Image (cartoon, rainbow, N blue to C red; front, side, top):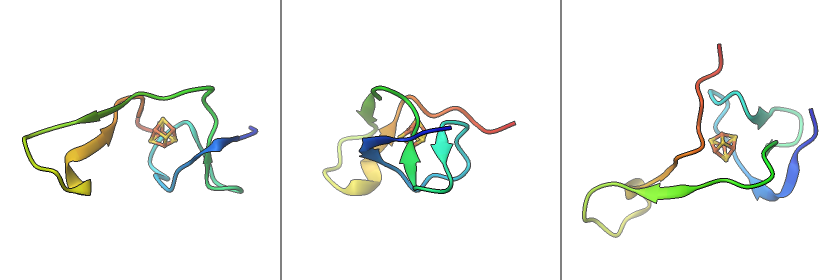
Length: 52
Ligand code: SF4
């Protein structure tokens, strides 16, 4: 599986993660937020799907 060089990602638990390059294999992703905070912990990748 090849990765998208424009989307670095370290979430190994996601089925779209490319282990060898630490990239996302999707063409694009959707990033969302939760809560009202402004910290990095308040952002999520909405394209995440758990690895089987
Ligand atoms: S979908 Fe999101 S969490 Fe999954 S590999 Fe791509 S960027 Fe990472």
